Image (tube, rainbow, N blue to C red; front, side, top):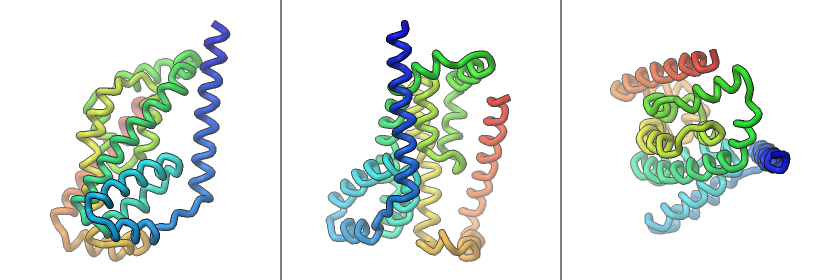
Length: 227
């Protein structure tokens, strides 16, 4: 029993150290977006798509918050549809990797360590329905990396989580890529330009109101689970 416990502690420690390294890289590693953009634009679509997906998976795995750079760059290079499709494929790969990294390195230790109300919280998270997993993936509130890791640390069934990834992620991805393609890089630094774009695209504005409702649903659901 002690050997197993020590093994689970060691695995969990590896996970924590990896997350600290990832956090450090996210704060200090500079990504040369201009070089990435030039490389992607110099290749045929099939090769640039493959290169983009490989870079997206590799870099965003180690630098969690670098995905925003890829979302903007791909919208400019590939347009809203292709960029959304390539990101969608990459996010499925990322979800698979991060889920099983967390499941293998952290789940056993978490399951053995939780007691009382935290054990009850783990049980509620593990039994969360597909509907809410879908909403969590579709609403632009919780970063995908945290969802993937959290799902792996709980007893959520992978097939159910993967289904939510496949069906829920495109809602968020294509919505954001459509906006980024319309506004461009300036969307990140000019809120007034972004607002003008929304006002001139009524359908997008109405869809965004639906997103506000989804975000509120996620917020209240999280509070309910915690309670």
